[in-house]
Amino acid sequence: MTHANQGQMFAQNGQQPTQQIQQPAQVQQSVAVAQKDVVDNVLAKITKFEETGELVLPSNYSAANALKSAWLILQETVDRNNRPVLETCSKESIANALLDMVVQGLSPVKKQCYFIAYGTKLQLMRSYLGTLAVAKRVAGVKVAVANCVYEGDKFVYNIDPATGLKRIVEHSQSLDNLDVNKVKGAYAILAMDDGRVVVEIMNINQIKQAWMQGATKGASPAHKNFSDEMAKKTVIGRACKLLIGMSDDAALFDEPDETEKDTTAEQRNEQVLSNANKKKLVDVEEAKFEEVKNVPGTSQHGANPPSGPSAPSSTLIPPEAKVSQPTKDPY
Picture 1 (cartoon, rainbow, N blue to C red):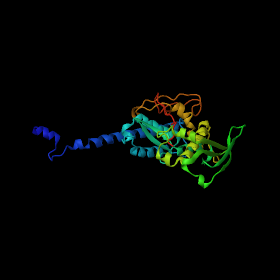
Picture 2: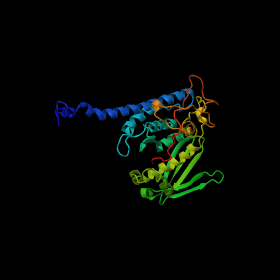
Picture 3: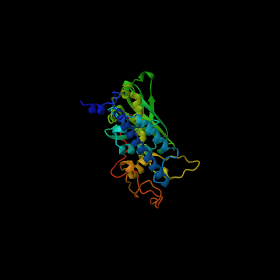
Picture 4: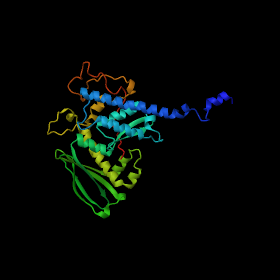
């Protein structure tokens, strides 16, 4: 090896050149900066849509705070190979996951949602707490309570033939029956703002079948060691999802007065999300945005979108993407 070659590999002090030592850190920093731009661009577009009335968020929900907290969480989130998701996941999937979070009005700090990497795609998963929050906000759920039915319990319910609604007639239970290995089923009771009481009942086979739809197939430590608590979450989740699915967008555009409760939130999953937001974000920094077109049932003020120099000529998500609400809750 010549002296020239040695000079290329080592500095005069015998160590590797500084440029080679700092290169991995520089690459990681550049990736983080690029992904942070995605967050900033998503927030800028959301703010513009709010100003023009193309997107309506709950009055007590801060998209800026949610995005900032999500960014902090994403910096610590890794995929199944223990690699940072900000390095392995695409910009468009990160932007879509963040948009999905804001559209549903969820807060990652409150554990209402999680970010999970599937290969190079980042996906938002709404948690049990997130489902409860959305149900209270848009479906009129006042109180949600769940109980397990164990072997040895006396449990009787009936169904009103006129309405099809279930009603708990009797549930007698003793302390000796409380055993996580002897859960026969679970039920949820939802007290509504309008005075109605909604009851959802699942037996253990239905509950386990629901668990099979999750990533762990019901084999996680929580499912094994706290199967009664997980059963409660499952039945409440099902009851809330039914109510959320039946909600409409009426609350989004009603101007609340001092005596009216603001219930604007996740019914955007049905119309705003299914019409305006069922497209995919490309690189946000260089994104080409489509004009928002009127579609029957879409959540926009009036018959026509805003026009003129101040009206945005774009929608946040370019074609062929799908910001779909996860069908599997991680419970």
